[in-house]
Image 1 (tube, rainbow, N blue to C red):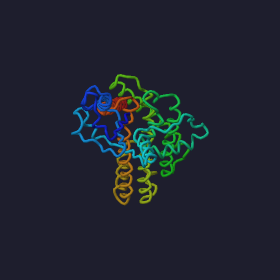
Image 2: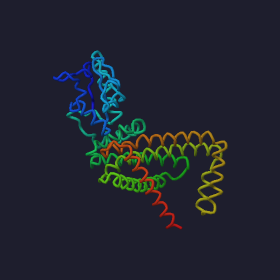
Image 3: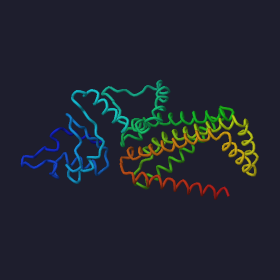
Image 4: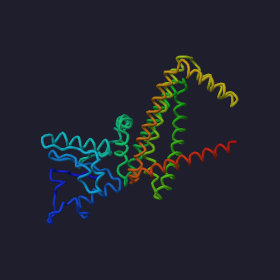
Amino acid sequence: MVLALVGPGWLRAAASSGSRRLDDPHDFVRREIELALAHGKPLIPVLLEGTRMPGPQNLPPSMQHFARCQAVVLANDRWNADTATLIDVLALRYGLARIGPHAQRTPWRRWPSSLVADLGELLAHLRALILRRMGNATDAGSDLALPRTLGMLLLCLMLGELLLGLVLDRPLGRWLAAGITLGLLVGAALSSLLALAWRLVRRAPGWRRVTAPFAYLYGGASLYFCAGAFVIFIGTQVVQPDVFGWVLEQVQRGSEALPAAGILSANVARGPALPAGILADAFWVAGVVWCVRAWAVFCITLGTRRRLAAAAAFLLWVALLAALCALAWCAAA
């Protein structure tokens, strides 16, 4: 990223010839800002000594987008507070952590409590957590990041399956084992297809750089889904107890009982359990928004800031997933 320090004389700075330095195409400050804008790098103007943000009319045409960048103020009388704000912006927006020269890695015995803290940050500041845990584009898929990533995924899957197991009154041991195993298999398949899509889009290897961030994204999305399902299950059970036990029995009898089970579940959900359904929809919509916000992390871990590449990889991933499902359907038929 680029921090552009803008002081009182920044616009008026002149070369030895008397011309304004910003009007010189070969000026280093101008070239650095132009390169940052051209390559989509994060660019933060830092305003010093009461300087105001320059307007686009005061900048060369190639730098006019600089006037629309979100600036940070560093005032002399609030230096400590303003620098702390700048550091927080870098941490929350771009995942840059404050690491001192003697920073140590988290001991293994403290991983459980660290994972719980990471879970809260994942749901609140997901991109910051993922970027900090994954590192930069070079070490995003390092072996040191993978165990913590797997631990976070297992924690999310376990919490989600625990919510569903409690409300459905299933044997928790077998329910958790089956649900977590199925979740891991589905996650492995989805991440492999996504890594293939990114490889086709960028023509560069990046399996680990895709799989590790996707594990966070997949774990958080499954937690949102299970939370919404838990709410609607609770609402339905209050209105008509044991309805899901009957539905599961019908499902086990065969496909001919599925329509009746689906109609009963839909009628109960649309009737007295409607408030629970609305609340569940709110959880699911929040989960979709959460996933959309998280998707940009792949551009950073893969070393590209181009949204077109992210959109192309997503569409190709969906196409591969649809083709795989169609093949599975044909094979089953």
